[in-house]
Amino acid sequence: MTAEQVDAHSIRYRWTVLVMLTLVYTFNFIDRQILVILQEPIKAELGLSDAQLGLLTGFSFALVYVTAGIPIAWFADRSNRRNIVAASLALWSFMTTISGLVQNYGQLLAARIGVGVGEAGGSPPSHSIISDYFPPSSRGTALSFYSMGIYLGVLFGFAAGGWIAENFGWRSAFFLIGLPGIVYAVAVLWVVKEPKRGQYDVGGTAAKSSFSETMACLRTRPTFWWISVGCAFSAFVSYGNGNFMPSFLMRNHGMSLSEVGVTLGLISGLSGAAGTFLGGFLADRMAARDVRWYIWIPILGGLSAMIPAYYTLLGNSTTLIIAAMIPSQILSALYLGPCIATCHNLVSPGMRAIASAILYFVLNLIGLGLGPLTVGILSDLFAEPFGDDNLRYAMATTLTLGMAGVFFLWMGVRSLARDLELNRQMLQTN
Image (tube, rainbow, N blue to C red; front, side):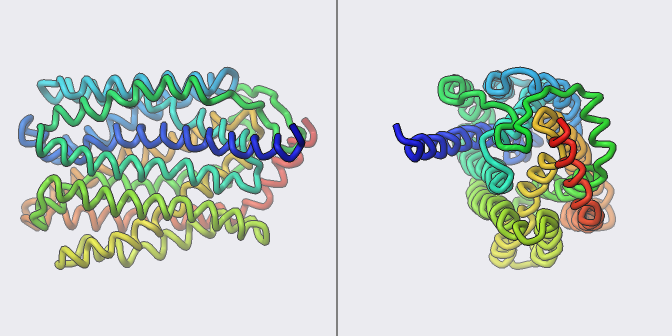
């Protein structure tokens, strides 16, 4: 076999792995978002408040997710990451399946906590694997492609979940969504190979770093923390408003469960996936001239998304609101891939899983943890002064609070070049 054939095979295989891991992430978000599309029938049967829904889809899940994520990532930085991803997929899929058996709020909460424990082992090891299959020059594109799994999961979770629930009941939706993930976990074990750590980085080091060493490194990288908080406020809006968007369209625009599922699935799924991939693709190319574009792209996307995002909440025409969701979703999704790639480029290969886990700790604690809970609490508080528009103004308030993320990302721009140079020097020394 010639060198060209070996290289072509390598490129094909790395993309095969990327597609496999993206599908894992798709299952992650199908199982996470299925509860969002089902929350109205679940609320009716179990007699829940909006605050309880926010706690169920947000804070309780996020607290377990972020707490379990760091020790799992520590283990991933010193063991077989592929096996961790497969085992995690099997666990969260099983817990999703048994969610269809619950009889009360406490049982459903316990099942969702189990989903959170499983999903905590998905992304950090996957991020680390991808960064060892792709060089820094294409890492933003690869990680953005992987992050498309969020929106593919939203697409299938909303569309399939809404249709199944309307035709067969919400319990059947949990069964039919959870079981395929258990089977796919076996496929991951069969196809994906554990890559050599650091093979595309300066020095090619595969040294394993302790948690204290990783934290010591991150303490000297302020860019990492600015990016983490900036991402967290972007997620604060996307999780907070996204988790209640089905309820908003059903309550304020009279759409049925299946109509909401198909509409949000197609718009959020396809537009979000396009925006996520575009963010990394543009950042990789524009950063060849100025590395700060890895953060400028998320900043510009976040600012540009605000006008259509406000219209989706405050407009009256259902048709125009749905149309405005398309640019809003594309622009607001630009941030994730470039930000993850930048965080990986700030640390050594042996620190990447922990770095991703810490990034996701901040992102999910603020974004997933507080976003839906904030919307739920505000919606209950606004019920008396705003009547049927309580959820509308709760979501608009959350959108306004989320603008703080642009400021934190801008702070990260200022220190990016210095921190990247520190990491280059560290890799050369090692």
